[in-house]
Image (tube, rainbow, N blue to C red; front, side):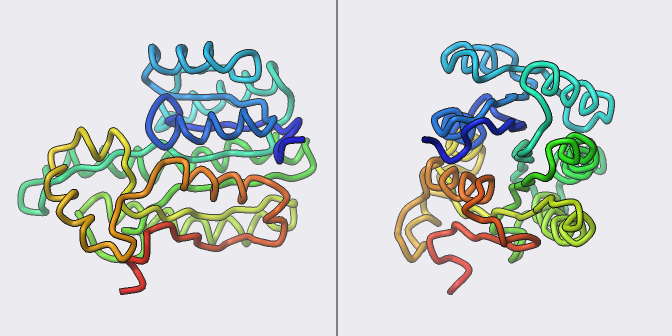
Length: 244
């Protein structure tokens, strides 16, 4: 038996990177997964590979109407939603001197506003299911300083997680945040700052970047009944960086 047998999950930004890893883990553990992304080609290919238990929906996570559509499609395909993983996000290697207002607002919309919209959208469906688990992917930079825009929004995700957890606990809906450190994903390896990141990784106490699957194992724990008494909490996966 899988840890998520029969549960219905939404994973945003699930076509590649950590999101893809979460989708694969959930499907392997028996969940019915709605995979959303703007990457239509990658999302459809992953859904086709994993079979009938995974359904792809193109979604702009910054649009409330897209969230409504995703919830409706999830319920039509599999039933009421019990798990939401707010995984979609972007980063930008720019200083506060170089970042434009439009670039800053884009990060806020994708990394922060989308999490609020997602939580709000799934509440009625989770009530139908009798409860649920929301996992918000923040960052190590939701605990310590880093790049402007990215750090700000990841701190906001941490705060929203706590406020939502308090307000939704009475409905049987748990809300937790995950704070990855340096993870070996396409967003990192294909980004502008890859050489600096590789050099930085040498300073991590465990002396390496994390694998996406290592984050997925934590997300699985929070999505499953194994974490039934955890809500409003931060779960850090950073190889010891924030302990320094």
